[in-house]
Each structure stands twice: as structure tokens, then as C-alpha cells.
Length: 253
Picture (cartoon, rainbow, N blue to C red):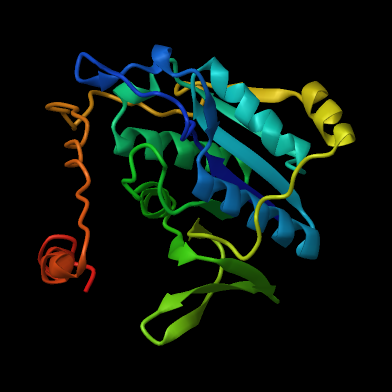
């Protein structure tokens, strides 16, 4: 069995973000990291590989800097590294990225796909369902755990009553929320081995994907409105005012 995990490199949560020309200025981002939900997907894929065997293929799309992301995945156990080379990934819309990732999954021979429920930079949540649609595969979202069930898989996800278990057969895509365990950390041997592992670099042409023109137009990027300054109240006489603000403005009571 071949398992694919889709990974995205995003600005680190500590990085300063600036906007230029209605787009995030990627050149100004000092630090890039693996999208957090993708970490849970990677860890769960590693656990499934450990229980049933097979090969784990780590796939990412983006510029040259994304190679570090793949080597981080290799350091904890990914067997094959695939870089879908796109110099300006920000110029593609979500359907174009999904087409590239789905083609890479097909070329890798994987029939089970893990990914995060959404990326930390866009929060669109469209990658898992979009790739599944292209592959004509089952898709389970908000997953916290996946286990093998003979010829199929059991995914655990939240429900109105608490949790539910969903059974699916391959081909299938699992989009992960927070998993039950944090991603394992690499040891020195894993890091050294990852540096030597080859990376398969595929272009859109290699994958037979005609990207065409984007069907999405970004009108503008703007930061969220600044929060109003905090308010301080003292004395028992302020209690009614504080209660009113907590109820009517903060919506916490």
C-alpha cells in the first residue's frame, strides 16, 4: 500500500506578514513552517504505515524553499519525497493547486491520502475535498484518527453526540483536524538520512496538467481591524457596567 500525505509550507506563526500589490509579500517572510494541521496528518500517516506497512509519499507544491518541508517529513519517516515545482504558488487558485496535487497522487501510485483540514495561511479547507473529487475518492473531514480495518479504514471524527467512526474503502482522502498525538520529533540519524534522500521534482507538464488561467480574482488583502484599547474598571459600583459589557459587547455571558 502507498500512502500519500499532502503538506503545505506556510509563514510561521511568529513571522511578520506584509502585503504588497494586494498579495502577501512572501519575500518578507523570515520563517516558514509546516502547516499545523498537516503535522497531524503526517503523524497519523506514519502511524498507519507503522501498523499496516507500505510506503509513505510526502507531496508538496511550491517554490524551491519547499524542499526543507519535505526533508523535515523524511526525517521522521517519509519514504518518498515529491516536489511539484511551482515558482509562484500564490498566483494559482485553489482548483489549480488541487489539480496538481491530485495528479501527483495519481503518479505516485497512492490510493490513500492524508492532509490537513485547512492551511494555516488561507484557512480555505478545500484541498482535501477538492483532491478527492478529482480522484473520484471518498473523503472524510475533521478526522482525528485513522486505523486499518482489514480491507478498509476507520476514521474517527467529531459528531453532535461526541464522536463517530466512519468506515471507507480506498481510494480515500482523510482531512485532519487535531490528532490524538503531536507529530514526533526527528532524531539525529533521521535528520542526517533526510539530507541524503532524493527529491522527485515534477512540473505541471510532467504531470500532464494544463493549468490554464486562474478562475479566481483577488480584489484586495487587508489586515483585520485593530482591537479597541482595553478598559479598566474599579470598585463595586462598576459591576453592572462590567456585566453589561461582558454580555452585550464581549458575548461571553
